Image 1 (spheres, helix red, strand yellow):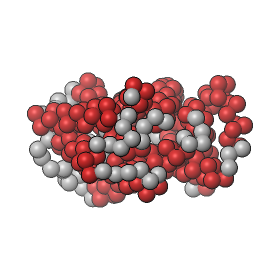
Image 2 (tube, helix red, strand yellow):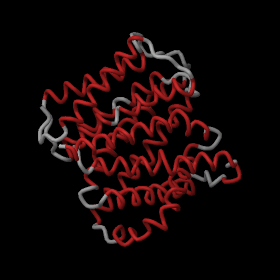
Image 3 (cartoon, helix red, strand yellow):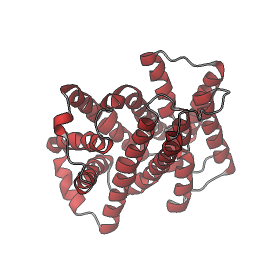
Image 4 (tube, helix red, strand yellow):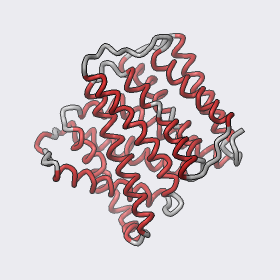
Length: 304
């Protein structure tokens, strides 16, 4: 039980790091093209991994075709489409009206739970789905309080909403596919392979679309932020996430990942001075309580 609780806690910690990234770090790269940012955030850590993890090449090149396909899908949906989609959604609303984007991204657990049941044959119980609904409801209160989402951001809101749904589905699919991938690779190999494959995919996309590689636009401050992300909220968080994912079910992992919006609100208060209202604190309590319960119950073969 202790090992599984630690695994779930590692996923929560990784999600919290992603919350820090979204509030403090990635917004500082807004002057660069979105796809190029995704490329840099994977290529730089991948290069830094070579002295330590370079030997993992031998394992990756010997992967059966089916496992290699799963790795490519993880990179495509989690590393590329999910990241590009959520950043694009935030860019469309200029980082001012995040309500609709954040709410729609919270659909991720629903995508992951459904895909886990279909692809991994994980059993779904009515009580687990009830707790998932409580967690998502808490996330809604945390984001909006007692008010509904704002739709007054102009014509771009529809496009932003669609991108946010794409991000939710992509990250949910990546959770399930990563769980499947860890049946063939350890968390070191999975991290190394995901970053390498994502770097390759984004490089090809930049070349094929004619976007190119505008390195001249990258300032010293940009390079510093990219390096910090690569070593902490990027590859560091992925390592934590994959280590934890080895020890819990995919549907448990996706509830733990709700630490991301919770941590984002906390960092938003610490960095930007944004305050929570009473209803938002209630939402935070619901999320923390649900995540704690799932963590403590993660040693059970079937969620009760």
